[in-house]
Image 1 (cartoon, one colour):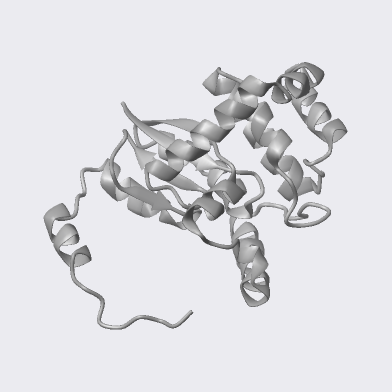
Image 2: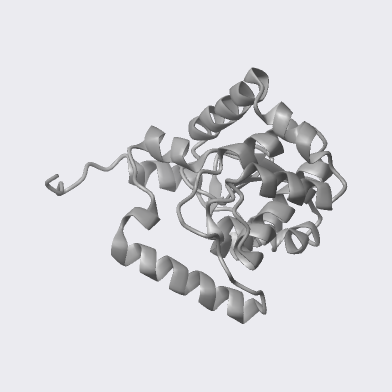
Length: 217
């Protein structure tokens, strides 16, 4: 069975939509492993800014997300404010070594946040959501504050950067060099799972071409 790594941060509404799509990926004879990464860390590493930091793009993103949620029949409420600090939520997910428990918590977090308006930067909300799926919320919060868990999330984020991940959600197939960025790339992911491939040599040759113009900054 093919393994697909899904890099996520609950601060992204597209990560919520992607996690809602995992069963479709698994139906294509793939197993999915959720990898929590800090989106802000990806942005900093690549010298980028978040889409919500651009007013015109911010409006478009939430228009697009609400449109897609309506198309799928999903409720959209959204968090009390955005962006918010997802560090505790990510560290709680990182503290769980069991893939099934991590997935259950991640899904509880994104659905609580985006479908019911929970503030998942708040410790009480995080503990309540974890308790609601049979996990030890207080214990997970305590683990999330440990130096080891903080280090593991930082290392996972750094490794994601090294592997070419620059945004969330991102899918990566069995350690393949190519990634699929965005919840709207699931169909392209299916194409590769069915054996589709591009000419990697042609890609390298194109990327080696010198630019003909440079934008002033």
